[in-house]
Image (tube, rainbow, N blue to C red; front, side, top):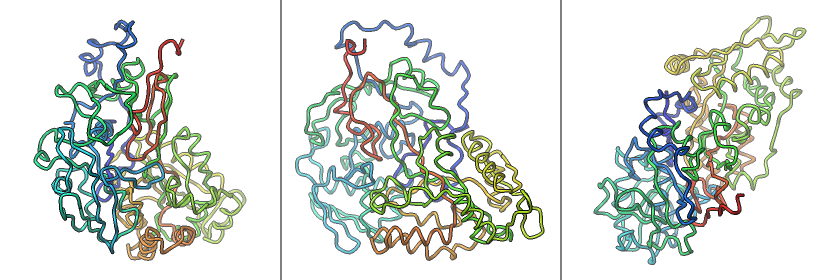
Length: 524
């Protein structure tokens, strides 16, 4: 069973070796009562007295007690998001996947080299200046095998401090989106190996580790509306949801993979785009499925808007191309938002040799039953598989859903024992799609070289050498996978909180320093 807290939130979240972890999130969360008793019995919100003094009201966030609060090693969504309040990088990524400066004052580009000039008005939480030498030491730590940021360095060939205020990063190839990778936390050089390194952020962890307090680092120049954040240690998802629903936490990183109904009705669920793409893969080694027109038929057959609405409660964004709709480049291209057409789908199925005989679709003279492979440990994936099966049956196909435990499921994919399977990949924030066009992600049974042209076009797209529409047309003619939707992260916020939410894909708590607690008199 996968723990909710172990959802990765890194720049290249499990990009290569673990891209097959697409069905683990969303497993059932069942905990024995004994696991909760030490927390719930001692601090049951139902048994607590409500403070009468308005000043006694605290804004509270959670942290996961199963790992250290360290910006280089924390892998849980809960802790990594909390730490972004205390540790800043050179840039952050906004809701349109644009990199905006934080510790960087300005930058220049020459070939593949980005030269960053640091701000002179920011300090670490202990008052010491932030220098390029601190950047270099931090990147040394981030590139090590024990760091969650290590994968970013597959795109970075070298980096160095030119002088105290100038930091140079050389990429293996440059595109403007490479700046999205430079959210790596910068800490004071001599503390990089500390359990709690000295950082530069809008908040700083109190000495006893129970609160976040406003920092004088200079990263935020405005007035803090939230000037004290109490921290509540949480061991599991059940306890997290419990404490939020009873008002002990004002905001949490929400898990909507199961059911949004588990969260209190008087809260706001704010969705934030992610780069996690869900898709269908067709086994091209099967002669009945080798023709790309079969895959084209499926891509037109699926009503993705209905899928997202029925299965995911609209906390995902339907897509028919691999381009993330939240990305500014995708929005500027003004692609057709939907290509759903049963008539067009049937035409492509006919071209692929699948013809209707009455109400039954056959391949040539053969009756064929299509097998859809899915991990039975993920209820939402199961529902998606049934949705796909229903659409195919409506088009005349004979279909069965093969639901397997995780180990059996991954083994079946590797053995090409499927006709279609459901997959997910976490793409890097630099919008590099090349990993999608490989056998590491899409196990179509074809040689990786088949999609070399698509990988080249994806790189050119990032450099603005290829228009998005041109790239999408090439993708549609190859279809190594059939995109379904991009998932969203979610922030559950109490209605007691006033503010603007969801301004950054790299920070769920973005803008928290401007949020306010609504007075009780306004709630009555």
